[in-house]
Image (tube, rainbow, N blue to C red):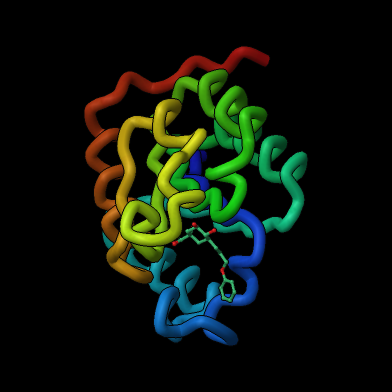
Length: 154
Ligand code: CA2
């Protein structure tokens, strides 16, 4: 069974499409999941797409991705700006990991300029709206193709 590409979404992203469309676009998270599934299928990848508002649940999912996934795409949302624990979880996995954002945090409020995630992932894609997810899948696909298969530890 091929390892899925994990696509994890942090807090409040379940609200996409309902408020602040001028910043985050009008697509719902379900719309984005459908677009990701279609694009990943075209590349021969299966996805495991999740959203949580809870930091511990997100960290558990990062660890699960490290054990069971081929690569990780993470929109950490607000936790990217606050969570040392999320940074530590990402440092502990060996699969390729990519940070994505719908908006361009560097062009927004100062408190969004620092990411605890960026220093623990292969790269960051931001500012392309829902297309950031598709670009993230392209990057993950390239990294999976060039990375040695991770060893299962348990
Ligand atoms: O641009 C992104 O993808 C962000 O990760 C979104 C986060 C924000 O804290 C980051 O700085 C950048 C916020 C997600 C909240 O999404 C909402 C969507 C609709 C209505 C309210 C919040």
